Length: 407
Image (tube, rainbow, N blue to C red; front, side, top):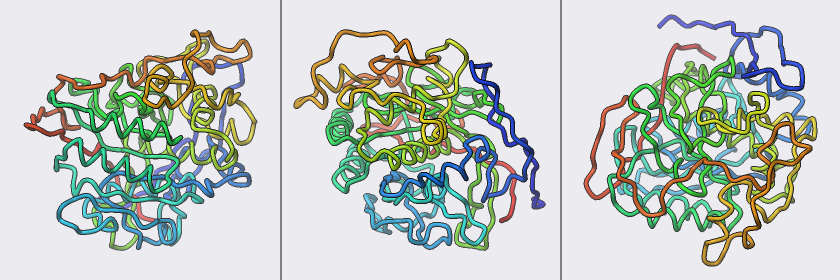
């Protein structure tokens, strides 16, 4: 494909007019070092206050190649949970490396510039490729490893559907994450146009499901929707490496809910680094309260509470962090854990009268309301083909790829 540089309007338009004026920005070249969403997020100004320093994000994926220029010095020693023993730093697929670069890339040597270049990436290899299936036990081990290794945020840009086996291991791992003040983000899936099948782990308690939007602030047509979606982030025309990530700098425009999840994780890291004394509950609460959404709309099944806007927290001081021990979502679930991750629940309250509009510090959304044991849904590939895996769960990469641009 002929290399191109596409001029895009670098505006994440409002889904509807809010009480503040719509944001407009000048046109700028869409490059791996300045993707279209950077202007909307006022990222240069944000970096004057925070780059995500001191925050570790675990990337549970296909491994991360730390030798790429933009990732050198950004990647910690992780673990490889695949029997082939290739190593956490081997990524034959490139998906995990892309997620790490979107989060923490430095843009060095015309590579991808991440949203939070001060972040440390903890790579956990659980998939060798997009077409490989793993069981719940491996994903559970990955979450546990991330928690035990001190990650504050876990990024899971993979997903799949259960065929009726127990999810007990996953629930125990997610309970461990909640009890250790760890935020877990997972992609909702790219299946909206092929059946819209609900995907785990985004559908499970304790996981913030993330959908994708385009540069107009509208849900991407492929982005799986439903009560599991809590937030949305840019997912279209997001930079990613070309097939051979070890070759010369070659960046293509791709995306999907995988990319959106990485950007949501990076947004949380920016906020948490600026407010290191906050708990996961407070970080998530301000993310929900400051998300871009239609006027007077608390949430919907397409973008959840709205599009993440870390700049509103970092630069404008918006969002009330609220009670550090009160989760904005999964409150009853966390209180029911043994031992409970949070105090006993108090009666439901409406949104704060000062919120404009906001889910409120104690609102329990429909998002991520999966079952505690098992789901009868078949696992579906991103392309929409049903695949049944006896006795295990099929975890798949959520990916969409498009045109090529070179750094």
